[in-house]
Image 1 (cartoon, rainbow, N blue to C red):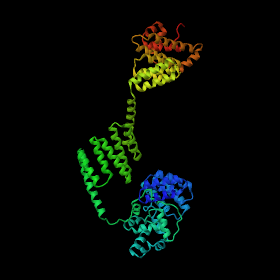
Image 2 (spheres, rainbow, N blue to C red; image 1 turned 30 degrees about the vertical axis):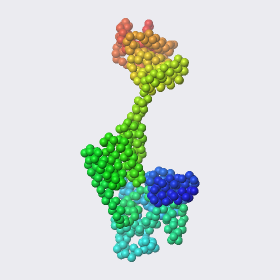
Image 3 (cartoon, helix red, strand yellow; image 1 turned 180 degrees about the vertical axis):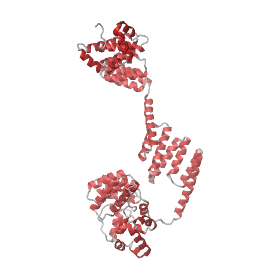
Image 4 (cartoon, rainbow, N blue to C red; image 1 turned 30 degrees about the horizontal axis):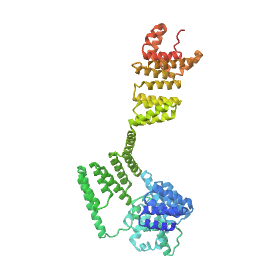
Length: 584
């Protein structure tokens, strides 16, 4: 079963259907989860899809199952190269060569990584060999013997011009890049020196078959090729590309169609800039019909967006992404299409889809513009969800339920009901105030104070909230703050309906302060005053200092000053703290 699925995966890989190949290898792994070759093959498929994180995961699994298999370490090196971890990639390839010094793919991968490291060093201003360290291979004392033994390079030795170039390259390795680009025979020479067949066979099975056909020995059971993760230079790209073939009629027709499509695209862009969106859409459509290119669809989606046809914009982007996935388009183009879908959904008021597609765009390519749009969309989505939940009628039902639970002394259920009321009607202060009353019963005083503050924020004249806040502060033994809350309530109680209750709570706090310092010595009183920042602040007030100095010579003057509510509150706090003592 697993072998049949592996064979199907190999066929799909050879047809460059890497996604399909990965799926077949996954099915084979399900059937035989301990087969290291299957993980290795799937790693190769993921690497071809540029999904290097997945490729690395499978490569690690390969080396875990069979740590003495060189090709597994080669897979790991290729995946690490793809993720950009060049040092770890170098270590993996070196491990592969320790296990199999003749492994051609590991040699090639190691050379590629070393070249990438040298390129980074040169970019950082550290200098380096312009040939990426490969020029030294032409100084190998057995160079001519190796070339003569190889059937592909042996005939080159009879060409005097080629031999002159080879001698020049041995003396001047810096000329390597120029010579390789001008004479493809040097690519074959480099392949011989590295032990790599520069014709790049399609699969490891094909390599093994070729080796057996030549009487060689297949020492491996690997199926899939190990593609380079990232070409480090134009030379390496040229090395991998096949020789161009003469254009046939079909190729000529395709080229002509591409040229005509590009003309349509150019005309469409000119009309887009003039804001003639319908005409621009027509030209982009003609371009797509003539030749399939993802940019024609993304351009058309932009015109649809500016025109205001947001659903058509979304449809075009979806088609562009689907086609882009098929042809392995640049991830930046995919990200741009996802981002435009997010903008279109946002315009349509569908914030859930807007957030989703902005997130998809960022997974493809992270840009500040899309990130800012995502944050704004998330805020708008949260607000929309809250607004959609608002319902005054259901809020009133929740309040009545909370009142009933409160009467039944079921405080937790009452809290839950009042919380539902707050969600349904967040601007109604009664929900916060009623919940604060329940929290006081549950002895959760700090939360009760917070709810009272929220109620006061919604309605600064809501006296009941001040009184409940004072009650919670009293329970917390924050007597000065309790007195402040009573003063605020008194200021808001212009009609005096709650004057008695306010006065009782204030006097209760003062009495508690007096009781708390009963029996303490003068030294203890001074220490307590020094630890009370509010009392110290009052004593440092120049106005209060002047009043207290005046009161020392004329106690009756203090009574006149206490007609001012603010002064009266401060004097009462000083009296409660023992700073001012009457009758002594």
